[in-house]
Amino acid sequence: MSIQVIQPGLLSLLQDAGRYGAHNIGLTTGGPLDRQAFEWANRLLGNQLDACAIEVSFGGLQLQVQADTYIAVAGATMPLQIDGVDMDLWTTHRVKAGSKISLAYAQHGTRTYVAVAGGIQTPSSFGSRSTVVREKIGGLNGGKLVDHDILDCMPTKQLQRYTLPPNLRPQYASHVRLKVVLGYQHALFDRPTKQLFFSSTYTMTDRADRMGMRLEGPNVACGTSQMLSEGICHGAIQVPADGQPIVLLNDRQTIGGYPKIGSMMSRDTARLAQLRPGNTVEFCAVDIHDAHNLNALAAHRFQNTQLAAIDG
Amino acid sequence: MRIEVASENSFIIYFNDHIAAHTSAQIGACATYLRHSMGPLLIDLVPSYASLLVIYHAQMGDHYQVKRLLREALAQVQDESASAGKLIHLPVYYAEESGPDLALLAQRANLSIEDTIALHHNMAYQVYAIGFAPGFAYLGEVDKRLAAPRIATPRLKVPKGAVAIADRQTAVYPSQSPGGWNLIGLCPTPMFNPQQDPPMPVNVGDQIKFEPINRSEFLQQGGDEQLLLEPIA
Image 1 (spheres, one colour):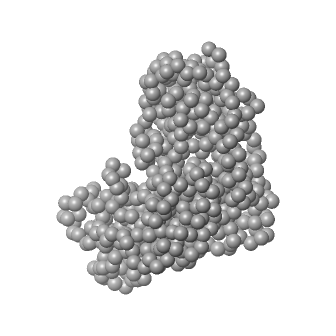
Image 2: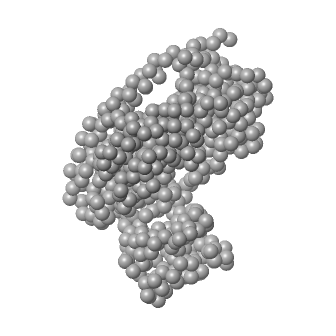
Image 3: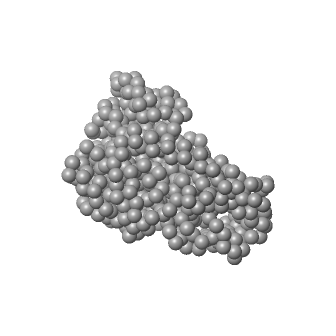
């Protein structure tokens, strides 16, 4: 069983949950920018939540399946068609051998996940199938999907179909409040600078990719620029001398030397990654206790959300 | 030593505010200790010049538990002074055809090219950090006289194996990439091979000694002749 790429769209990448345990040789994590949408797509198929899927940025992907299987698409609202018929996102769909799947350009949000029953079975590298284009690792030959790529998949078995009730689906707004855990060099940022950072609105620029998102707004430089390079975690917010924050994401370099005020919670980097240039954000500070509680609560809610079964 | 929160699931331990060999030894020992003591709680470690980033599974243990483990580790490595790492020899073909910035560095240091080369390979370097690109190891510190700022306009293509200097750091480019470091030679030993286990010949905490080789040794040891026929821009 396999799937053929007819048109890759602007940027479509194979991603599983990411590559862990390889920072010591300089490899970054990769993985889905919006972990929530990615996990929903897998869960709708009864897959392992970390199964490899396609992350479609902006849209334009067209696929053809070579054998009967099931798919689910979750994330930014990219109009989905199967053999020319409009289909719902956040829903399990049965697709027949030869069927064409197409995703138009996103109306809200930017990243959508196409999961396939059993997960995509491309070779893994350093324990993960995730593609990091900058490192030329993962995916098919380390690159983004191109025309004629063949993606191996598991043979199909009969699946119960589900949908996530519309009132439970995430909304992709154009202004979001994002939670930040103070950390790293936060003590170098004086009180007025921190107040400015947490009370201002920042705008997404077009310098935004899987490595990081550069935001524009009031200058919050801390005055220190000489720093030894150190490990950079997911969500770290670095502020170079120009005072404009950069949120570092899945494909970040693992070490760097700019001062950091703290790190965005991963649930919120997922929301950040759904924004477009010109959209706006505000930051709010949470302490490490709040962060753990919020994550535990969100995990609990995800586990207890019932999908609605679809007959037939 | 100071433990700071870095994110919802990571801590960063600061061992020192400047680069020092004993600091590097402590970081290496601490990383090894945590790999054993944290078990499945550990996701990833990023050792660097004077710090260690520790990323953990926040679903498996809270930050109090992790912080306690970090304190235990720090108590264990307090007295570490010598690096437990290996000494690794890497061959380098130092020449103007393999190192286009060699002449400029020699001129700046007011040395002959031969003395400049000797100054680079006469000492052992500590592996302080790995990052920037897969397999890119930051080595230090080079002799003060060889310290050189990054070139004004970074090259679009630094070849695989290029031996380079920036400030008092030196490194071997593991693959062809853009870069702004000063190039002084070529190393035929692959620094990153995903098909090999381990994929890198060096780890943070190891020491590296460069061994000068000549043109024909470079080619015998797998060096790419193309890089010499069309010298690096």
